[in-house]
Amino acid sequence: MIGMFATSKAGHDKDTVYIIVEEDSEYVYVADGKYRTIEHPKKKNKKHIQIIKKNSDDIINIKEKLVKKQPIYNEEIRKAIGGIVCQRQM
Image (cartoon, rainbow, N blue to C red):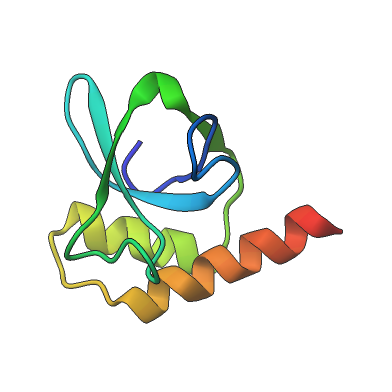
């Protein structure tokens, strides 16, 4: 699931779009590049997120960097999320 878009299904951040930056057995760690940066991702229970199955060049690039453990910048995350949010509103 690393590198995929996800929305929060519950809580004060409901419907917020994130990118999954890390995963363990029960939780995922998500970032939006603005409030939740790559340096301080939010810990979310896997039951409380909804995966968005959309691909773009930005998300493919981010996914490759996450898998290869290369540095990722918050600007890249914001740009990718901005593209997906615009598509969802249409």
